[in-house]
Each structure stands twice: as structure tokens, then as C-alpha cells.
Length: 363
Image (cartoon, rainbow, N blue to C red; front, side, top):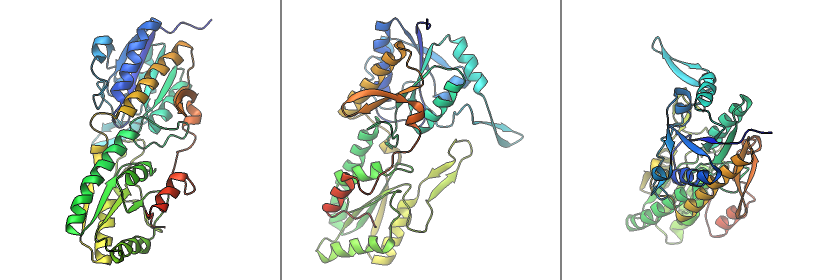
């Protein structure tokens, strides 16, 4: 007979986003009904490697539903299988998984709930192979996990983008300018696509569709001929022109994925100004998309994910990830969750609708 689950660890890995605290609350509150105690692990997998954690109870999670960020702290540089250490003035990469196993056992954990995106789920899969009982909760503003209809945090990021475009619309119109808005998303264009449609962008550039510079200029000229003397361009950080590479801010070997994207907005703006003669400005939203309170949708989704993960733990459904399927939370294997990135397809209805209302993708 399987050992009864009595003690749960929970951590938030990767980049922060609205809704993390709502999940922590969704985990902690129902746990007592199952006779479980909850240990909050600090700063993602860093705390799991370094042995930093604190007990969580009702009082700790009271009032955090609407709070942005995470009360546990997070990190996207804490991969125990890719642990950076400075020796002799150089950064070397070590495997610290034995520290993880040691702390897991010392804390007498029966299961670990890992809240995070693609990177966190890859680590969770590897920890499962080391004998840890792991349950995943899908978090990423990028919405790029294919096994779930939506990750929490995405709706809140899209809200920020759409509100920014609303505000920039008036200043672009007043000064007859082109304004380029650079948004996050890494290798997926969901934030730019959904935020761009919601905010009335005229051009949306995403990683999945390498764009033609001439098509971008053509859209701006077309609007000029129609008497529209301004344009809004929403560009995802991973977007690139045909035959060109993604624009990188830096390569950081301390991260599992060393590519740090950023700067494409400036490239797009410079090319537009030089080739159309239109005065052009750039706004980089950056971490604004990660901060602040979650939208009502994300609060509900996060709470569902948290409570469901405790239910999975009680049923010994390890190696699984909570996933939104339609309007209900189900579970899928973590292996399935990380098999493929969910990328924007050209034949999706959302893209077709965007084209039908006159939005150009530069293709």
C-alpha cells in the first residue's frame, strides 16, 4: 500500500508573474482538509538546493490572492542539474541534484508541487527520474506549454499590453508617429498576438512568422494613403525578419537557456524610420508584463490549479501536471507537457481574424 501523503513542498520557479500567490494560497488552504502540512521552498529550485524553506499555514496565505509576485521568491538560474559556481574567477557548471534529494528527505516531504513554465517542468521531469514525487502547475506569461489550453499569468500580461497600446494609440495619433511596442514571449508569439489584437495594433510581428521588411513598410504606406498618419507595431522579443537572426541582449551561461532576448523593438523602429520617413518611437514593456495584480481570470485559474494539485497529491498522481482542458482542470504527464512548445500557427482562427480586420504580420 502506498504511503499516505502528509507533507507537501511547494516552490515557484522561473520568472515571476501574476497569479503565483493565488496558486500558493490554493495549495495551502485545502491541504489541511487532507491532513497535509505545507512547506514553502524559497527562491525556486535555489532553495531546494540550498535548503531554505518555511512552513506555510492559513495565516501566511491570508490576503495574498490579489498580490503580484510570489511570497516565496523565485529564480530562473537555480537549475540543480545546471548549477553555476564561481571558481578561480570563472563560472563553471555543476550538478547539485544530490543536494536536492538530501533536502527533500531531510524535510520528510512526500511530494513536491513545482509551479513554473517550460524550464521548471523540464527540471521536474528530471527530478522525478531521481525518485522525487513531483506535481507540476503550468505558469508562464508566454502561454507556450502545449498540454494546457492556457497557463496562468498570460491573461494578466495581455491586459498590460492592451492597456499600453490603448495609451500609445492617442500619442501616436496626436504626433502622426509610428510607435513600436516590444513585448515578451521568448520563442512564442501569443502575448504579441493577443495583446496586439486587444490593443488595436496595425502590425504584429511574432517569432513564428519571419517577416518581410517590405511588407511592414507597405502596411505603413497603405495607412498613409487611407489618411491614417500613424501606426502601432506590436513586436514579440523573439521576432525576426526573413533571413535574419533573433536579436539578443546577451548570452548568460548561468541560465539553462543562455539566450536573453531583447532589442528587436529598436531594430524595427530604426528600419521603419529610415525606410518610410515616418518619425518612429519605441516602448519596451519588459517586466511591466510580469508585475502587478493578476486579472480576475488568472485569480480563478490559479486557485483552480493550486487546489487541484493537492487533489492529485492525495491520489498519488505524481509525474503529472495540472492542465486546463476547456473549462475544467485535468491532468497530463509532465513528459507530455514538455514534448513541444505551443507556438502560433498561421491557420489558427485568431490569426485569420486578425488579418480580416486589417492587421499585418509582415508576411
